[in-house]
Image 1: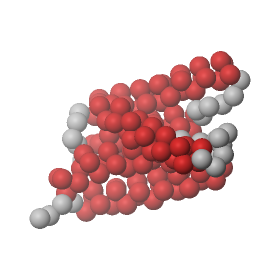
Image 2 (image 1 turned 135 degrees about the vertical axis):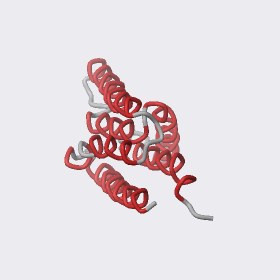
Image 3 (image 1 turned 120 degrees about the vertical axis):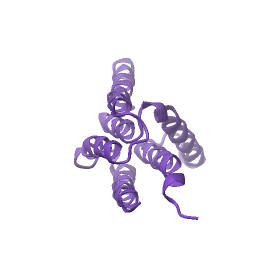
Image 4 (image 1 turned 180 degrees about the vertical axis):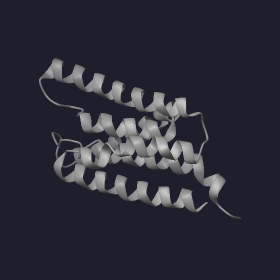
Length: 154
């Protein structure tokens, strides 16, 4: 149980830092996002809910999907709409959670981002949106959803 809480604390601090930095700078530092991938794979070995292959596929698919979408958008518009920082963070989510959780991470992130954009739209229709905080929220929510029932004492 201590391992779960230690991992959760480290994940919470890291995702919180990513969210704050991305909100301020519209960038997700590699120093924070890249270590999430090996840490997530290690966590998957230490607290196995799924076979490790699911986490490896999650990391690869998370990066590939977001990198492809970001590349397509850039080629189409000439503007970075989804950066590689988001792709690396989504890869980290896949490493920690497995590929099966990625659609829900993305749904939570999209709903959070849309709600925030809606509120911002009332003040500034053309404001940029940092997506990292919403990915971090979806990532953290799914980590808790998957593991907390196994690690709480009643």
